[in-house]
Picture 1 (cartoon, each protein chain N blue to C red):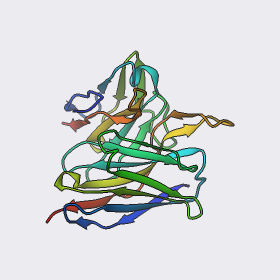
Picture 2: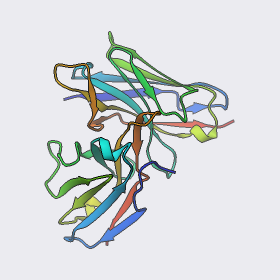
Picture 3: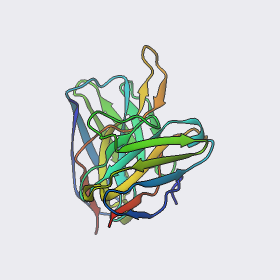
Picture 4: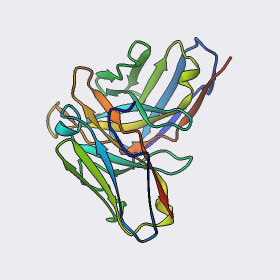
Length: 111
Length: 127
């Protein structure tokens, strides 16, 4: 059972927009930045979004992030078949057992 | 451009100790925490723990009793040891830079994410 809750799967057609949610609590998302990762099959995860809504160099602006309260959202516009991957949210949990935490992951299917 | 290269034994027997090392090339070791993450077959990511250049560590509570992360700043390397492994420890193990970065000019850290990852090492525990 992951500390952060994501939908197991989402799907949309090429060219469309999709959002992936990530729900947590005041001890994690509510008081820390959120990051998002893309994992293509057989590869290491890649950072897509850091500090809630910032994109590392080289990440297209089709990818966006937002945070409100204890939830965060990843948005992807202009879907491409190459976007088909697993997406994970992550943050820090500041409870007594402080540490990094991830969501369970969301499989994006581009129909 | 920072790159991480990791290595270690890929096949272990139950009760043995997993040992992996990650080398950091092309960037500063200080100012960041450095993490180990694992991913069991077909499952999601699990954060194992982190260390900074001073040797300060934080571990996942579920693994804390079996995990040791150490650092060798002279070689820009950090290592993972996981004792008493079982089949449940079978996974791809990754090293990464992050998830915390120092606030400029201070010794305080905040979460920003893991922006550089190693290539991953498949570790299988089987008798």
